[in-house]
Length: 290
Ligand SMILES: NC(=O)c1ccc[n+]([C@@H]2O[C@H](COP(=O)([O-])OP(=O)(O)OC[C@H]3O[C@@H](n4cnc5c(N)ncnc54)[C@H](OP(=O)(O)O)[C@@H]3O)[C@@H](O)[C@H]2O)c1
Image 1: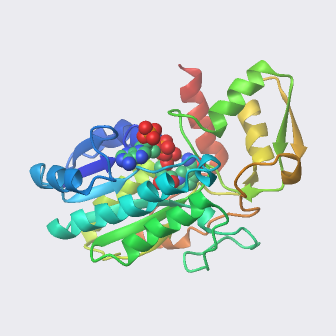
Image 2: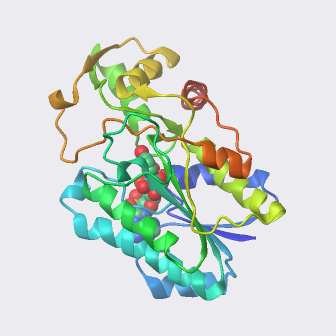
């Protein structure tokens, strides 16, 4: 299998690089801007043909949730049109696609973990453009799946864990929202899951074409719980104070509840998912070694 990982310098792409060596039967091509832009369809076609790519894991995305409210055109170019370019390019070579999407396609008004078939209703530009990317994959004539994930963090890039650690070392107290519930996801676990799915599908010939799957770590947390765990596990002496969403206004509205039901991915691909605190501890121990 010749696997192109797009957006490979981001959190998820970097974690795939870290685990790639364990998947000996795969040959990887890690590409990001400016060398390979998913918005440039001819560049994509040429790269895929030249390197005989048969599979793409699309980690490329416009992920600045608040900035997207002001930059809707560029967010749509990457998260919507860029994904359609990948679908068209892969259709020409009968290739496979794993595309990553988000819990922000939901409005968060539910109170039970979201299933893949639940109605989407994104509240902001980022979520709307990511939903357009999902539609490009599920309506495309390719062997493609969408994996929705939530609250992604990693030892790489900028994310909640790294921001809390930095602020926690600078300040005695931190206000963090307690009325938004979801599940943190260690990008390292998602990276392994993407590659395990490809290996499993190859072995079993399972046809998941056009399916959506949910993946996060196990359990439920508020951002407050998440921040408390980051301080405790990192042994950072900073008091975390619970506040309400209304006291921390942001440009984009976020779902109050975006816990994902992961039964389908566990059943179809025999995936085991770690508890969010255990995975967080692993990331923090990696960060502590730096
Ligand atoms: N982060 C989260 O909390 C979260 C939550 C749920 C779902 N997700 C989804 O998970 C996936 C991975 O997220 P992540 O956190 O790893 O994202 P990330 O760290 O922001 O990485 C995205 C990468 O894509 C690159 N990129 C942007 N536009 C591109 C283009 N036109 N062509 C090629 N590459 C491009 C970015 O480059 P630049 O940095 O130069 O722009 C960056 O290296 C995304 O689909 C995201 O929507 C993320």
